[in-house]
Each structure stands twice: as C-alpha cells, then as structure tokens.
Amino acid sequence: MFTTPRLVAIALCAALNFVAGSAVYLIKLPIYLDSIGVFLCALLLASDKRVAFVCSITAALISTFVTGLLINPFLPWFVGTDLAIALMAAFVVARGADAFRARPLRPVEFGGRVLLYGILTGIVAAIVSAPVVAYVFGGVTGSGSAFLVGMFLKTGQQLWNATLASGLIADPIDKTIQVLIGALLFRATPSDFIALVRGKPATA
Amino acid sequence: MTPNGAVAFAIIMVIAAIASGAHGLVPLYVALLLFAAIEVGQASLIALRRAALIMLPLAAFMLIVWVGVVGRGPQDIAAGLAGSRASALAYVSTVAARLFLIVCLVQLVAFRFARETPLSFVRALRVPMAVKRLVVLTLSLVETLRHSVDRAHTALLAAGIITRGLSVRNLTNGWILMQTVWLTAITTVTARVRDKWPIELTVARLDPALAGGSNPLSAGDVGWLAAAAFAGLASQIASFHAA
Image (cartoon, rainbow over the protein chains, first blue to last red):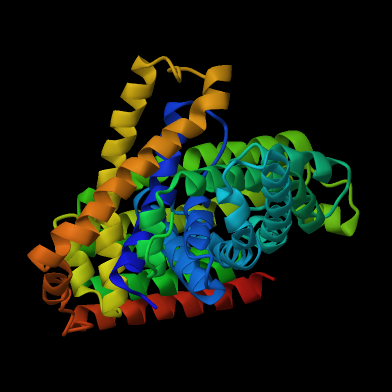
C-alpha cells in the first residue's frame, strides 16, 4: 500500500495543507485551505477507494500534528473532523475524479459535482466538529463563524445547537471552495505523476 | 528527558486538562510550572510569552462573543435563566485557562528540545518507521513548498495576475498561486522519485538514519509521567468536589 511514490504523495499533500495557509495569507483572502491536500490525495488515488482513504487520512493526520506542533496548537483537537473529511474525500469526492479531468471541461458537471461534494463534506464536517467546538472551545474558535454562534446563543439556543447551526452554515461554503481548488489542482496534475502514484503506466 | 517521555507527559496532561473543571486546573498548572522550572529553565519565559500571544486573540474573541454578545453563560442558557455577564466571564475564564495550559505545554515541550534538529527528534521517537519516514519527508517538502510559494507569489505579482492587497483579481486568480505551487512541487518530486532517489539510494539510506529510540523512557521520564498522573488524579478529585 505505502509504495515510495505514495509516501511522497502523502507527504506532498500534508505539506500542501501546511503551506496553504501562508499562500492564502499572501493574497489576503478570508478562506482556509487546510484540507485541500486531503481532497487531492483522495483524487490522486481515486482508482482504489481503500488506498485513497488510508493515504488521505494519513496525510490529514501528519499535517494536523505538524501544524499543531509548529503553528496552531488547537488543530489536533479536530482529528475526528480529519477522519470524517478523509472518509468523504475517498468515498464521495473521489467519485468525481474522471469528471474533474474530462477534456474538454464539462462545466455543468464539474460545477455540479464540486457543489454537491462540497456541501455534503461540509455538513459531515460540521456535525463531527460541533462537539469539539462546543466543549473544548466554548463555541468560539477564532474564525468569523464564532459571531454566528453568538447570534444563535443570543436567540436562546443551547451551546451545542448554536455551534452545530453555525457549522452547518459556514462549513459547506468552506469545503465547497476547498473541493473546487482541489479539483482544479487535480485537473492540472500531469498524467505521469498520477500514474506513478497509482502504480500504473501513464495513459494520456 | 527523552522526546518519548515528553510526548507521553504532554498527552497525559492534555487529557487531564480536558476532563477537568475550573478547580481541577490548579494541580495541573502546578505540574506545568514544575516542568517549566526544572526541564526548560529560563527559556520558559519565552515559551510563556509565545503561548500568551497565541492565546490572547482567541480569549479576546471569546470575551466579545460570550460577555459582549451573548451576555450569559451556557449553564444559564441551558437552565433558561436570565444569567449575567459575570457568569459568562467565569465560563470564558475556565475555557481560556484550560486552553492556555495546553498551549503552554506544547510550547514548553518544543523549547525543551529546541537544541535538537527535527531529524534527531524524530529519530528518538518510538513510533513505526513508516511514520518517521513520512514526518521527515513532510518536513522536507514543507520547505520545498514554502520556497515555491515565495517564487510563485513574486512571479504572479510581477505578471499582474494577482495583487498584494485584497482585490477582486485575487479572488478570481488566487487559485493560480496554489496551482503554480502544486505544479512546481510535482515537477520537483517526480524528478526526485523517478531519477534522483534510485541513483542515490535515498530511501534505503533514510531508514538507518531514522533508526533509534532504543531507550524509550529514561528514569526522569518515569518521574514526570508519575507527576502528570498524580496531577491528573488530583485534578479530577478537585473537579468532582467542586461539582
């Protein structure tokens, strides 16, 4: 399962998760691309869903612990969310691998799949991360969605419900952007690299 | 203290911190201060300052949301009481104190091994070789990607594709920066895996370089683990009595 090219692909995707933050900081956009490597890893290995899952969860865990140790010590709390995103990436998002690389581009199918996968992954991520956000962080993680939590709490919602509702609004948008960029990067990836990682001879 | 002992110490302390209430944090802070004084020494002050810099924005955000916007604690909301800003403040203080302890702990452990290189730290860890290999590869590729980000950012700025500040152009073309970084990394990695590494036997040489950790725990580690376990137990008892 862990051939040298796959190990390198996992490390590359984990490193991409790690540096995406600094790239986003340079262009001053208010988005997080901290799971982009997980989607890419699953898409690169889409031909075998089990391998795609194992490799993408490994990339997620490595990037979470390295980022947790070096930059953001709060990130390791979201290991459960990593697992959920890796599951969704390998078994749902990876289904779109062929559509994402179709030439010429089929915009409606491409956009539809990105939207569907992003929203589904966002909903799952929101449900899984809500208990951590509510219990460990008191509903406030430092992102703009904390104000949504505050708004829901102000209306008398319980902490758990407020956190979940806020996550269900913010996460699908965030994950759709990440799936979109992941799909665009996958589309641009040279075929010979994908063949190298999948362990098959290059086709096109 | 060995890296294995430090990691185990941190894990016990973090679990205890998460499971404890406000009163239970006291014994954990005592254990943390002892660790700082004995194992880290003067560098503890820098670690504390860094932890404060990480924690302050989040604590300020919590204050704005809970004390400013909501105006009552979660226990008040659950009980359907009017509540007060004081109870919201008490809640924020507990959550922030717990998180600060965890951030401090991570910083102190990092400072404890500041003289070690990432390679020697990873080598000493008692984890499967595949994990060591992955961590070392990731750290190496992080540097490669950071350089790619800098180069691609400069090139795209010069070409007028993106701008320095927030702009519509960055919104529509920002992904090109990610794509440039990705493709640069792919080219580098493909060349290494296909041509360079097989000739230099890089992967084969990596395993002996990472082999180590024959002494998983030192006597000092055992002492610190016992201290963490004792502090964790005391923390649970204090939390139970306060409840």
